[in-house]
Image (cartoon, rainbow, N blue to C red; front, side):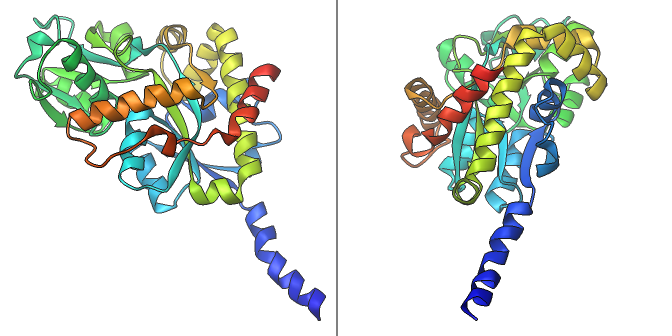
Length: 311
């Protein structure tokens, strides 16, 4: 009788173990590089993917419990965590930040962020595009309200920028490379040197507690996939372009410039994340005291290091 009761109690655990890990992704990001590198072999059937148009709705899905984990930029992660979303960063990414930029049309008269004073810049609220505008204004010694921000999702922001409803578009990859390579767009500011170049694999607290092994395997494979991509840029660009239906020169331009890699959540990550938090606090966007160390989980660092070694 006791054995029967134990079996009944164990059943929910077995069912949870068989439930796919719910992973949020943005177009052409984690899933694409893991597929191209072969890192989903023997693991892909244990993942249920959900694709999002930008990081903000991905963070909302994490907060609502609709997904277990997802890769997002440091800005949306920070805003979500600071607003009380039950998430931690279990891995970080670093990359060259020249592909995070404020774009103007090729024939635009604007040459710098100072030239955009009083003008309209489209970007996503709480996005890394929002971040680069704030950082560029501070770097130029301008007040944070020197421009008019128009908050739109990427497709709507591009449409507004194309028809001239806004003077500039603050966005990220692959949009920046796409506009540069295909349409001759110009960057009047970019994030290299003024933003940390961080992204985060965010996971819900309850997923960290109950799905630790799967999350560790995921970040290990993601780290290995990024190592492979950096060593095979042309081949990966070709594969990615076929998956995403975007010209290969756009992908290669992005990948060579970014050199994205997965890194452990170490002291340097914590220091750079604190810089992000402090920037948003100065802008009045984070209204409660937040410490980076409270948003980060270092317990997956060994899995990340293992992925890097095996690549």
